[in-house]
Amino acid sequence: MNFWKRRLPLALTVIYGLAGFAMQIIPALNGYRDIQNSWMPILFGFSIAIGVASLTKYHFTKMRRQPEERVYSIITFISLVVMAVAGLIGMSQDGGVFTKLFDNLFSYVYVPLQATIFSLLAFYITSAAYRAFKVSEWISTLLLVSGFIVMLGRVAFGPLMVFGKLSEWIMAVPTVAAMRGLLIGIGLGIMATAIKIILGIERSYLGGE
Amino acid sequence: MAEDKNEKKWYDYLLTIKKPLVYLGMFLVVIIPFLSRCKLKTYETDLVKKVFTRVEKIHEYNKEHPDSKRGILLGFDYGPSTTPENDPMLYAVLRHAFLRDIPVVAWAPYVAYLQLAEGRIKRIAKEYKAEYGKDYVFMGLAYPPTPYMISTGTDMRPMFNTDYYGNDVYKLPILDRFNNYDAFGLVVTISGTAMPEVWLRYANSLYNQDVAVATTAVNAAKFYAYAASGQFTGMIAGLKGAAEYEQMVTRLENKVIDEDIKEYLTGLYKNVDKDKYPEKYYEPEYTKSEINTAILRRRQAGRGMSSQFGAHVYVIILIIIGNVGYYFKRRDEKRRKTGKWGA
Image 1: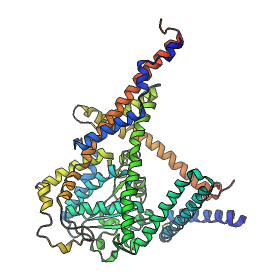
Image 2 (image 1 turned 45 degrees about the vertical axis):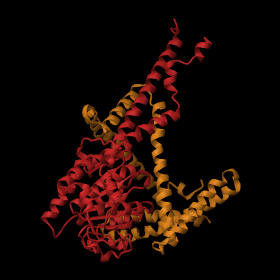
Image 3 (image 1 turned 180 degrees about the vertical axis):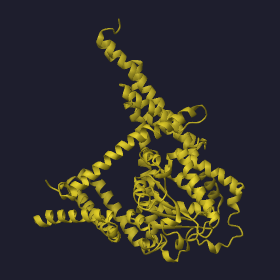
Image 4 (image 1 turned 180 degrees about the horizontal axis):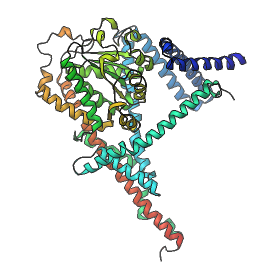
């Protein structure tokens, strides 16, 4: 059991991690990179199957154990089944009932729902800014003033144009400087984590411990 | 003293505006300018101008080299949640490309983006009589995107086999030439996600391909660093960027078409061979409402900017109100503590 659950996945991670690295930096191995890339859609296909199985299991368990929240799980499960069935059957019936069902569910349920949820952010941000954006120290004052300039600068016209120029400078100089620092830090973090995973030091992805 | 503590001061009212009122205010400042169809003219920035100029350069190149034209590879990298910001960018870039007769090859990296992409691309193609398979093509799903980006270094066709509509990719004339980065003058990624970074990593770093990004204001802060270093050829950032590009394209359109848009669209498919435009891609005729929508689409970002102006000013006013209340409350609390209160 230890072999299947720990040693084999660890060995595969080390082998493929090093192989992937070698394929990127050794030109002679570039041909293998294309083979590796063509495997990726297959692996992603399997991950979808695992995702669906996991979602189904989770919601069935929830339906049994938490009757007060059963309705949400039922809606999720029905949505999953209806979209999957409509999509799969619709694929072979161009212009048929299932295709129309799938298209309509997508265009008139999924799209407005996503857009609505995202647009709610405007309301939450407004309320949060009003309640939390307070001048207490010089650094928060600086943030507040920059925020004002950028907000006005983005919509500047006529006499407000001075904010437009200032806003451009803020985005092109201090923002870029801060972002570069962040990106370099993130990049180094990713590299360190990747090396730890490839060398088998970081094993949390195997679960347990 | 207890009475003093319970008494509500004027600044307490400033600090306790009810949430529904705040929300209602936001709703009104967004909806009123939008419904009244106000259009805000915006100033044009260098980053957006760079994208526009790059597309114009492709047009110039194509004029000089009609046998080895260059096209645009379009990554439709956004979903329903960011359509209000990304749609005007897509429309403006596509209008520019079709107006200048630049071939467009497009794909989408996720299933949820497919239908959106297909509907929007054909909508703009129709406005310029672009022929499917000759002037533009929608390849469909490119998932996972990385291998598709890499394979475009040599030939993208083996990765797809068929386009979105099920056509054999080897039978579409546009793909005979426009199947790898050498044939594309520019990659434009229109995105609400981190996908532009993936384009940079593969198309730009591996194949030295020019990449322009059109992204939401939230993501733009991150991409300014890449634009400043020249890794991105240019950037259309947020609704403002879209409004800038929209203005530039509208100016160009007025110059190139030199006709009232309503009349232009009304007469677009009169006296044309309709067999060239199979209904599978789009219907080669315009109804009155379609024409009105197409006209409104030409100032979609400009209209959005007026709502954005209202929203930004409203948030600033609320923050000022909150801070005035906070300042006076803090001052009174300090006075109370130091015993100077009510003296």
